[in-house]
Length: 98
Image (cartoon, rainbow, N blue to C red; front, side):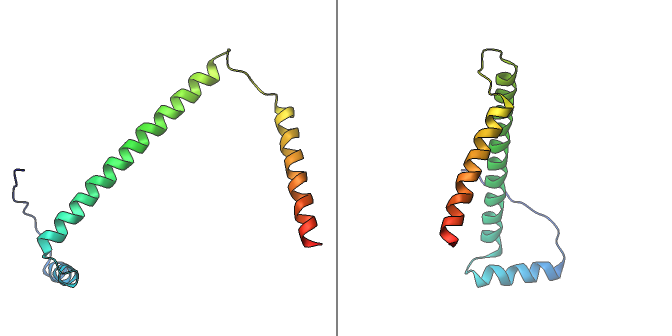
């Protein structure tokens, strides 16, 4: 793997504090910077992958919503089912507290 130098300016207090943090982890400042850079790149990739997956899921859902061949459930049947489930849970909770 080819390596290159990364040069940037930072105030002296921050540099000294960072060097202390690195030393407390038994690393040099450069080693800790590499770890932080790798973590930042990894997090960015994960966020981009999740965003891509999420957008694909939304597009799929929108296509499915527009597809007349997809079976639909009436609002009242779904509401009734949830009310029955809620009533059953409430009965269970009442039985536990008695």
